[in-house]
Length: 110
Length: 113
Image (cartoon, rainbow over all chains, first blue to last red; front, side, top):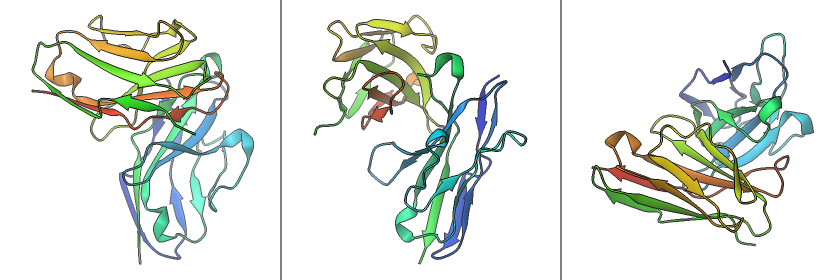
């Protein structure tokens, strides 16, 4: 079964601390993986996708096929990073479909 | 430019009633998607349109749910005989082509009393 698991519902850190939002997936193959973010009162938007290998707003995510993980990291959290973060996968045979995890709320405290 | 828009933003209805939710995609986007997000969960895929046709409706939970996109632009999600379990935020997204980034609308919050 295709599944995305985000084990933490809430992650609270202080400003300047490192952040790691965990994402594990189950898929027999090589899916495409994404992180989406939803800031307060805004719509869901793409943060990054693994094939682009970009760093967006200081965030990076590395695909670990052995551990089937795609954790999102940032070395120094900022208050404006507080938001809801969703990990998602797109199966190769139905690339239009996004399968989301249940999300992690990141709270960055001053 | 204008993003994906959805109307209404909120809809309260009674069990058993019929509802229609509308999505206006970004102009020129050929692909359109509907997702449903229940409380505390991530969005769940419902249906994907390429142009006017539903290319994959495997996510629709049952035959009370139906969606159309008659002219390849605006789409309407229709729910018959609503049930309390249909209460959720219904999200629409569009992309230029299927391989491009999906842009999401603000959602319609449906509450079935």
